[in-house]
Length: 604
Image (cartoon, rainbow, N blue to C red; front, side):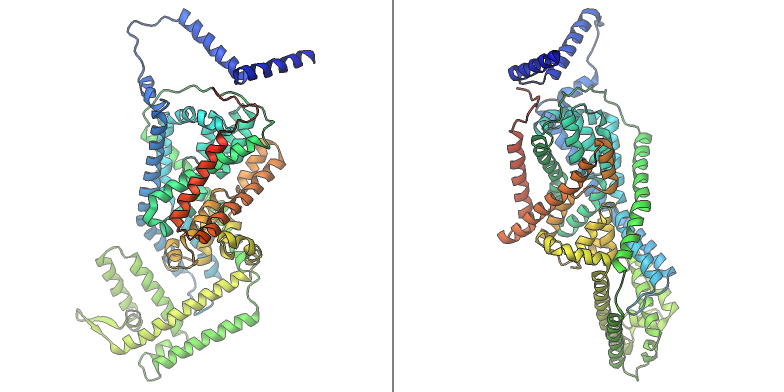
């Protein structure tokens, strides 16, 4: 006991005199002695030259130039993956929409108001999956660039550059790689990031790293961020991408500092030591292989977790369903709309018989297929083929859906009566789609998940979230990709519309402040179930798992409420609120960085 007390006293004395952790002093002395022995024993050739890696590191690891190089690398990564990668979806989405329409044609046809159950289930789940799969080109670009950085050997340099910064926030140089895996570079995953903390000897930094990794930009959050940026901040895309890509790190560092000053202050600390590998030229096969491995993991997650979530969400958003009285009310309103259409057309019209009985349902499905085929056409020649094919299938239906226009002997003509009936039909279609939208909302409101979303809406409304967004967020507990998938399932993707188009047309009734509040909330959203299990496994504590699940909810609601309610009160636009929020949080982060924590090993 006396020896241990003496050791503790000497440790405290050294810490007070040198302001440096004794373990670090021992490590420094060890390496100094190793260099001294090496200089006495090693014989260098007279023609010895510095390696290329050493020359490059003089710039890359320079105290002033290193951070600038790092910022440039990160900006280039975001620009190529998010900016240019999104442009690739303009080519892939038509393929997905064509597949969706192909599946829809194999299913029972759409009804005037109520669709067959099989059609509803399959298309709802498929819409959710396609909403997520649409972002695969972005992920492919992102994974390829990250693989190149890993092959080059730049990731350990990132750790070295960031160590002095991270120490100010209770973290460690070895926290960088887990944070990169978790999403400092957009597109990470919290599970491998948390598991990669095993090599961190500093227990305080290790626990802090585990608790903040879920706050970073993991792959699963990216689809929702891209969706909202494209719809609400397309004119300020670069600024919005920079904001959402870096605010997660700013929030994470701030939270880490608070944790290290409070609940983690009694944990042991240790110095940072890392050996730099030489630079290497990446190989095409290696980059392609790792890109494919990560994409395959992404597809597996979609097929397993997201597919399961979408099936569960469909059940929870459709059951128990509307009661008989409400269904009868909708049926009467639908029947009245049909009567109004027939009255507008008139019994004497040569097209009246087409709209009678099942003919109207057949016309609706013919019109849907015609619109889908036109959207899938990639050229004028392809569009011309679509017109010819549909006119050949049913010339009377074709005239009605094409506003009375048709070709006769190679010349375009107009059937005036068909044009008049077509106008009445288009008016009916607008009313029918509005009623179907009301029906879908009514079904969800009276569903199990809708009831939960409604219960918490009095709290979340101050953050700008209505019951539909609450449903999407609740589904995200299983997998964050489900936020976009659930929105795709709730609002549907129509007959080939992107979710961006549906949201952009006002389906949500959002402003840019709504979008900003949701983006920031998603940044700090609680870990998904696999991540929570990883937290429990790495900390060995159920309590830490519960803490990692609870504090992001409270923090996220606080930040989202500040943005939405505060922004509206001050009359701010989304861009103004984004800039103000960023400035305030950066200032707060730097203020906290100046506070010295207990037992820190910061340099003089």
